[in-house]
Length: 186
Image (cartoon, rainbow, N blue to C red; front, side, top):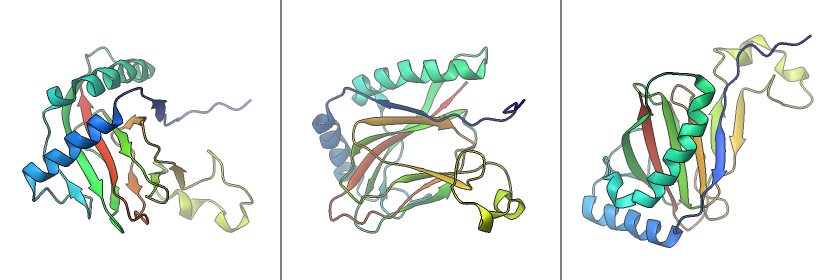
């Protein structure tokens, strides 16, 4: 018998929203904000945005977040804490980080040209790469991998526990990768 005692879920769903409208809103935010912030990124990252301006998107996200949240069997209501825009040009990255103080985090991909960088999640088992016989592994899977990389696809929502470390690869495209990220708490 095998009992998988610790699992880390990532929720992936395509959303039917107006990507052109979202892109325009994101680009307007960058023009208005100009400077942006530096956290885990080398590209543009806005300060907290007003989610009411993105009502259709966040209404859709919330429906999926509630489904995902049920897996955790927590009795408190889930709320949006904050949201921000990421615009990564050529060679821009988001370095490894997590989202302390939140329960669930997510990202929605507005524009993802080919070769604009995938998102990579890090195995939460500390020092896993030191404990396993990495040089003898013939095929990586959910039991033996140190990282899992998922494509960044336009119109796709990813939800994940806020403690899960992740980073976004370098944008090797000449076009910008645009996403909207957010945190949710109890």
